[in-house]
Amino acid sequence: MILSIESSCDDSSLALTSIQECKLLFHQKISQEAEHSLHGGVVPELASRLHAQKLPLILKNLKTFLHGNFSKIKAIAITTEPGLSVTLIEGLMMAKALALSLKIPLISINHLKGHIYSLFINQQQCIFPLSVLLVSGGHTMILEASENEVRIIAQSKDDSFGESFDKASKMLGLGYPGGPIIQSLAQECQEDLYTLPIPLQHSKELAFSFSGLKNAFRLEIERQGSNLNPNALAKAFQQSACAHIVQKCKLYFQTKKENQQAIPHFAIVGGASANLYLREKIQDLCATYNSNLLLAPLEFCSDNAAMIGRVGVEEYKKQNFSDLFSLEVSPRNTQFKS
Image 1 (tube, helix red, strand yellow):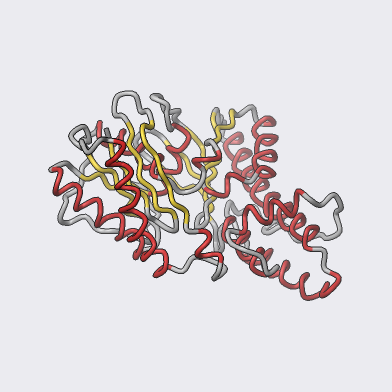
Image 2 (cartoon, one colour):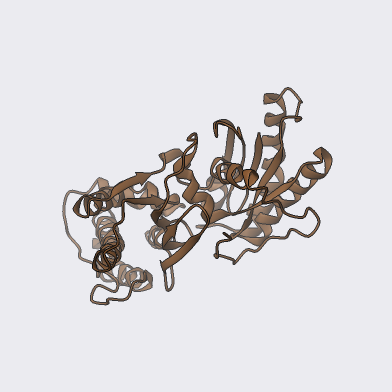
């Protein structure tokens, strides 16, 4: 088995994955959303302290699951990049202590690559080559992935898709995380009362940007004052943000078609990929271009150790181990190792 640990932001999570069958044997995650919602977003130092409390609790449950027998664990897969440095370190310190005591190797995992492999949890076969829209709390990217390489094709120039929802919710005086809140408000609204601009609508640049939309949202709140209909504005925001994503994905599809390169499989991954409106619109786009849409189960869209373990299985088979004493976290590294 592979023991995996995820602590890149505000979710403490451990998992066990079988090496031969790629079956998820144990998975537990403790979210910190309730604590951070009091502050309108993730507070790094608070997240670090909560990881220090919650990770040992999950490890205790894992020990009970294994009846105290860790002998079948052959390696530990640990998220080391990207993420918050103070939270990544909490997971890495636990991983190093366990690896040292159990005398087993460490496997360093890129958190974003983990999101790609969330598509293949409980599956022995991975589907490659694969084009991927990654929309998480901190990243918005179009990626091209093979078994040995992940390339960044496009990314955000400023805020990410997920961050923009968090900030929109905060401007409305609502909680964190903003994605589910904005989606819920939008679903409750049947009217189209507001129109917000679609970012980079007339640009042929393959890139994303959400700062302008965020500012337009703020100005509309100020303009409406006490007459504001928050549900309708949330709906307008979600429509514009998703239209921007779809337009840039369409540009990507068109570029590939012009170069006579088909996209047999297209995936949406990351925490914000749980947005049902976005899933619907990308499904329509994929149908237009005869591409098969792959989606991770909703329970594995947000950060979790199960996806880290699934990557860990592949890295274990390649014997891609890291040095126990020199391994460090790389909080800002969004590049992918082949």
